Amino acid sequence: MTLRLSTRISIRWANDAPSEPTNTVVLSVGDYFMDLRITKADRTIDWAFAGTREILSRDPLHCRWNHIIDSRLSFDPDEGKFQALPNGDDLETGSMPCVEKGNKVTPYEEVWRELQPNHGMNCGWILQGKFGGDDVFLGQYGGIYLAMRQNKQGVFSVLKEELTNVQGRLQWKKAYQSGELKLPSLSSMGVVSPPEEERWRVGDKVVFGDMAYYVRALETHGQKDAVKTRSSRL
Image (cartoon, rainbow, N blue to C red; front, side):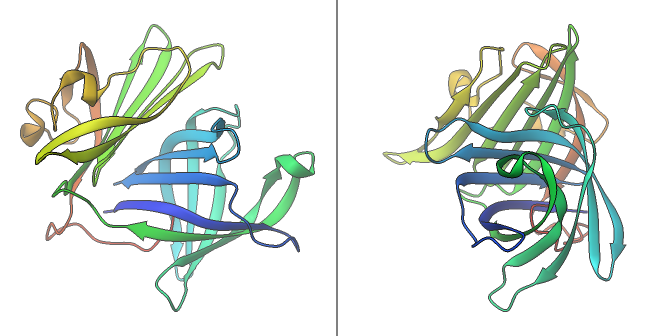
């Protein structure tokens, strides 16, 4: 299975020059993912979405991402093919609508880099819940925590927290927040890991904060039966 934390290094549309207008982090655990892209210029959400990932082929690696929630309300699956670069990064190629080109479907190239887990946070998970019609995803791996929520009207909220060492004590700190919908916060809970996390199993119904969620994916870095697949943002 997959356990990976990635950041995007650059994107290139058709014959344009490569650039990176966002701070992007992608959390991938098992067959689920969460993808947050924050615009550098004004720190608004460029794109945020979460859902499931399918491997369509392995040689070359070809993946499909199914969007269950999406800040752009773009629920059509997107696909990409990957190849490893000499420096260890991954090149993703495909075609998708480009906002800057009037949503015209345009060829793209993205370069992705894997991030290593910090502070011994080697367990990764993604939870999913549904509350009053709102879809909620929570995920954590390697010292990055993401929470996303979308209601029936398409309104989207997101929270990103990072684990930091404060005078020898690990604490979660809010790194980014957008939207008014309520999201559980590890920093507000005052814990490094959710209660009973070590007992979780895929498919379990667990309580996180004051809400119940299903454990959709759960992996541990270095676990013998965890198969690493190169798939950039996954």
